[in-house]
Length: 160
Length: 160
DNA sequence: TGTATTTATGTATTTAACTACGTAGTTTTG
DNA sequence: CAAAACTACGTAGTTAAATACATAAATACA
Image 1 (cartoon, rainbow over the protein chains, first blue to last red):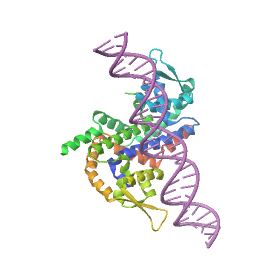
Image 2 (image 1 turned 180 degrees about the horizontal axis):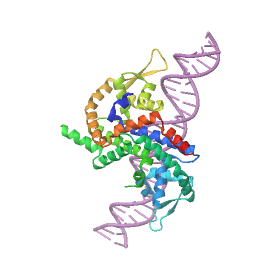
Image 3 (image 1 turned 60 degrees about the horizontal axis):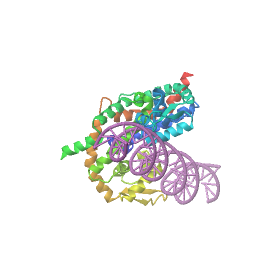
């Protein structure tokens, strides 16, 4: 066991990041093993469009929890892959409305069994005495009510 | 609730990353609120050197779980801050041995109470019905025995 | 109604990690 | 003991996110 893992809660951000990165990388290889040309980073956008049909750039950004410039660059890649297309909103000329193409929808059908396998593999990994997904949800919820910064500042002020 | 959060386990990598990023950002602000000039990304290196005294570049990289080029760039920043120094290993001339400077050690003493506060705030956030830190450890352990990729490939082959 | 504010999108730049590759010592081996 | 393989470190370039800034359209309001 190394020092960082021993340090416990203090290095939790590092460890969350490392775990995320590992899963992302393996995810890419799973798609590849099915002969599917799909990058895990595209998942949030594609999955959102699959469920919401038509959304603007900022709406997608909010759904996936990224900034809009990051979202725009994902959309550019997906447009290059011809998985999505966009058109101007007739009512609000500033808006660009994004939709899946037929190719995008076909790809989703192709990916559905892959997602099922991934879901099962991830469940194996995450479902322990402490369920990782539930733990994330609970932590997100705590932060929603009071952020890490707010909590730290409060503890600091209580000390004085 | 947005689609990504509803998608559950499939978007777990995205959510881990988001959570990590939030904690990292707030961490930076906590140091700032104490008037301490320290970036959270330096923590793994500094904390490791604090416990191990003298290590080579690759040893640090292994301890903190980063690649050696990433580690080198962290070390460069820390050297610029005069928090660490390095000297050639007399026995193995390829090695560069890294140590904390006096300034680095003083900074650690200054940070100890901040770490205590952070530890408490993070514990508040992570300690729920499902403990996030334990959940991470358990998931890491599962992956150590069989990776996400291996699990997915196995599930795939069982289906055929 | 025309000016101020807000919203939607886009571009440029930065950041923090990575991979790929190269060089120079060290160790192993035929 | 010389060649091959390995290890340690470094640099260059890439990637995937962010922030900062700019512009244009829509909305609010005096």
